[in-house]
Structures are given as C-alpha cells and as structure tokens.
Image (cartoon, rainbow over all chains, first blue to last red; front, side, top):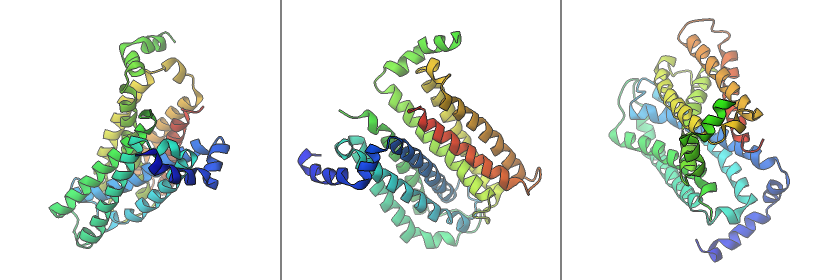
Length: 165
Length: 149
C-alpha cells in the first residue's frame, strides 16, 4: 500500500485517545495482547465445536446445542476486534504497510463472508439435523473453510512482527 | 545447568536462533496449537459449567482428540522454542509459572473429564472446571508475558 493512501487514515488512528493511552501506559499493550490471545482461544474453540459437528467428525454433538456457540464466537470476536483496534491505534504507521497485517485483514473479511454464507445459507437447515446425521456437503465445505481461514489468520497475526522492513 | 547450556549450543538451538524463518514459523505453529488446545479446553469447560447442556459430554470426547493434537503441536514447537535460550527461559518466573499452570490445568482437565464420564462426584465438577479454565488462561497470560517479564 502506498504511503499516501494510508497516511491520512493512519494519522487519524494515531491521534485517537486510545492510541495515546496505548503508547503512554506501559502495561496496556501487553495487557491487550493477553486479552487478544484469550479472545482468540475462546473464538477458535467455539468455531471448533460448530465446525467439527458440521464436518462430521463430531457428528453426535447435538447440532442445535452446538449452534449456541455462535454468540460466544461473536462475543469473543468483538473482544478481539476492539483489542485489535487498540493495537492499530498504538502504531498505525507500523500496521498499515505490514504485509502480514494486510493479509490478515483480508482473510478476516473472507472469513466473515464465509460466516454470513453459513448463517443465511445453511443455518436453518442444519438446525433440523438429528444427532449423528450428516450435514450437506456444502455446509461441510463452509465449516472446513472456516477452520482453515482462521488458522491462517492466526499465522499471519503472529507473523506481523517478523515481516517489517 | 550443563544440560541447558548443551541444549542452547545444540544444532536445534542454533537453528532456531539463526535461521531467518525458523523462529517465526515455529512460533506461528505454537499460536495455532494454542488456539486448538485452548479452544477445546474452553469449549469442554463451558459445557462442564452448564453451557449448551444439550451436547452430550460423550459426543464432546471427539473434541478431546483434537485438543490432544493441539497439545502435541505445542509440546513439540514449545520444546524447539525453548532451545532458543534455555539458560534464560528456565530461570524466568513467567516461564516457570506458565509450565505450572499448564501442568495444573492438564490435571484438572483430566479430573473434569473423569467427572463427565461418571467417575467421581458431580457436585464438585463445576469447581474443578472453573479452576481448570483459570489455569489454562493463566498459562496463556504468563506465556504472552514471557516476552516482557
């Protein structure tokens, strides 16, 4: 990304109250990191329950009960969105040009579209599944994509400090 | 101490310190393994604490297998990362706490699963489960703070 493209936006993030707090309170950045990690594990765990059921590996997990993990995943995602924005505010000129960060953000958008597809395309049908019953192939593809994309999101997130130039 | 020095000077220690991509790749695996094992721990304990009660705990056992896969990924990647600077990590308070949390969390997870499978008293299960999840989160927090403390 060109410097001219992201500079105005980055300046705006940098000047926010959050950015100032993140830079001035020495323990806030590490604290947010631990929050981000805990949010990550809760979100990934919730997705695992749903995806493992849909893929069929855990086909005796009650489908309707598994879907109760959707709000948990959304709550955990919100925690990570907010802590993520805090990192961004702390040092936006570092994140915007970072290739791992860019890929991570792009993949999160794709994961979001995949989740919308799951919700609007498959959710209703899946609720009717009896214990032990196989989901449609389409739904299995979405579930497998969900796990794969989030794994890569985690990898790119972890790579952010290592691809700086 | 002699062993730690030997480990640090081993070819694995040299590789993880000096190779350009070795460290980030192993560290990423450690994050993915963490998400897997912690994800399973979180889900199982949510269930043990009474959330999504309609899931039979026995069906959840499948998830336990995935948790073990995550654990093995992290044991292996963790040992490789440890070879980076074992003489520092071994004496680092946050590292020692992390390992203690994981050991305690592992034992508690076993206790919770025993309860779930019908061995032991059920009334204590939620206490064990709460303690279990606290230990594992403690492991994540102290692990992250190893970079700072």
